[in-house]
Amino acid sequence: MFARLACTRANKVTVWFQRDQSTPTKIKIDFDSNIDDLKEAIFCATDKGQYQATYNNEPLRPLASVPRNTTDHMPIVFTRISNIPPPSEQTQTKKNKYQQSGITVAGGNGKGQELNQLYGPRGICIDNDKSIYIADFSNHRIVKWKLNSNTGKIMACGNGKENQLYNPRDIIFDKQNKSFIISDVGRRRVVRYFDKNQKTLISKIIRKFGRHQKKQQIIISNIFCEGLTIDNNGYIYVSDYEKHEVRRWEEGDEEGELVAGGNGQ
Image 1: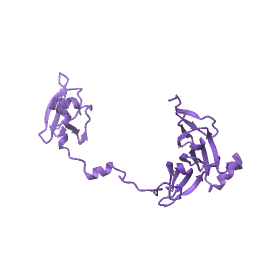
Image 2: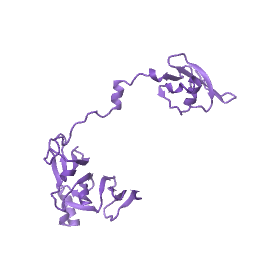
Image 3: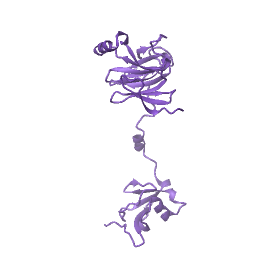
Image 4: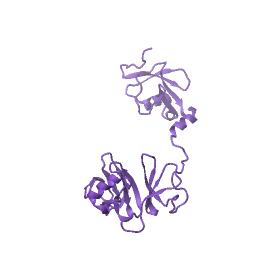
């Protein structure tokens, strides 16, 4: 069977179509017509919106070009939208990949400062063991919840002292340095906390920055940081709520590189 789309002297083409379950038929339309034009030629302007066009079991958008190889055995099919059955339960399941009701993985015992509670949690990150690290904002601490655990473990905290956390807002993990980078909003800074289990790394840090840097290192000062992220090259991206900008930082930077915003409100 050869294709039944042929140009005429008047730049017309012949298109095979089928309306619902009727017998395929053909119509001549302008060569550069789209599906919406074809609908209007078949159904008139007032009714064309009531039909969905498909070709070879694939839906056709209104502005799509008319297929060039329609035949009486493979026509463009127009189905009245009201006759299209709703998606099956299996199709709906594929679309809804995520469960409609989640499970609690941390907290869930009301607000508070106990190890099974959180108080205004903000940013989170997850390590390779699927443990969750949470910026527990109003408790001024970072807590680690292992997978399927009922309680958390305090990784860093603040007790009102100037060198400790106060309202941490976000947290990311720096795989290269085996450390956490925290947006410490209340202290207007971004700090790096080192994993105390990495003894070799800590020894190197002490030699480089001094013994007072054993647990933390201030990366950026005087900043109201709302969000953090890190790329594969180790560059840290920091959003500044007050300056309405995002800057990229690498070790040793004093100002960082502006990558977004920075033009006022």
